[in-house]
Image 1 (spheres, rainbow, N blue to C red):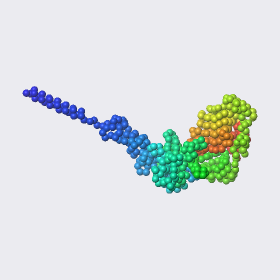
Image 2: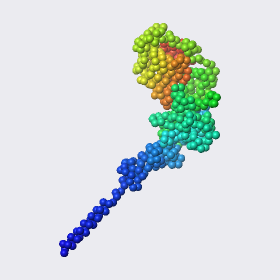
Image 3: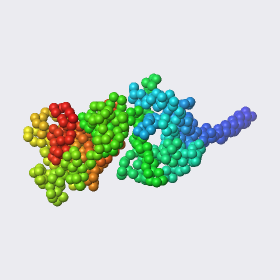
Image 4: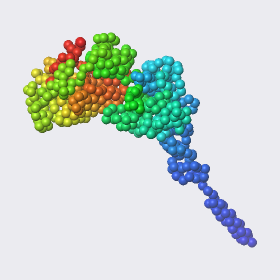
Length: 562
């Protein structure tokens, strides 16, 4: 009897145990976020527990405003920042980043890209443009959104609001009705965008809305009103970053800024041009400016621009065949003879005038051998002045000019830094380089800094005579010599300084029919382009420039006189 009882108990326990294990086996395991499988309670699962992508650590789609920057987030938006709430000076409610900085145009003055500019200094203790500007500021900012569109509003006291890209479309901003603010987008496209890279390049358009269809600014030479004009002027707007300092606390922040140039050149229905010209964009409240030291400036037309307070555009004379803005100033004074807008024309030396004008004569034919086109690269010939002419196709490293003339049959590209060496004994350190094409400078060109000289003729001194244009790369910071751009047709070429936030220093002089001054780096003391007439052209005249040198300021024992 006992055995049966125990057996029944054993059977009962066995049934209970089997039922328990069957019950346990039937239970569903809890969801695990991050295993790559969307389970109960999860909206997404990307196989990780990071919240810095489209799916959060709790397996929910990430969104703008969750405090973490995602690119993209769960809505496909490539966030640039995360707003902190309230009136955030740096980030929009849709996670677009606000741009800081200023623009300057000689025709209408300051342009602000963000109303918070007035609360920050680009460089302490640099002031903002004007107290009344900040006292009367209206709400505005330009932003880069999650799709790399450039949107929003800038503000100028003289012309009002300036819209960027799709913001200018009546579809996006209904208040911009066609009847009052213009009928069409330029070239049929409402856009302004930012490309990837460092710095990023902007293309597209901005618009002064009060000018309607006449208000378009091109932000890149590839999309001007006349199509692609980069061959004429290689302007563009870039987006980089710079530091700003809170005016109250002094705390620094890094913010995106726009640099470079935009262009307004409205063409009316009769084909006339009535544009506002260049808009220079920068983090700084000092506009880009041209500075020359120890020399003169001459323009065949009008001169505009400004030097910072206490600085000067030229040491001596500023001459023009047209008006000179009162903000373009000489260190010697504001009136004639130092500033003369009615000086009259100084014609550019051309083949028809045998390369001569009131400044003197450049005997280009005599500098070269009669059969120069038949002389092979790497060999020499003798010109009519009994000077050696070396035919070359490159220049690099340390160069001793030796008083010779150098001829380049085509375009010369300088990709490595050059240093022109001083000579010794009775050797000459001067030389003239004649280029039958363009001169492309991609690396610094310097003079030997050794001042242990016995004779002036030992001093390194170079002249560049270019039968084409002179193009200086944005990476270059220093070049030396007398630069004369004759142009491909001999009637005057173009010198372009390269779009960059770094200043460019030229030790020597420059002559061309047209200058593209593209540098945007600014300071109170140094111009965006600084041209220092260093006296070498007189101290040791390069071959062929004797006549031109007579019209230059006189150099005596390290001092200059007019």
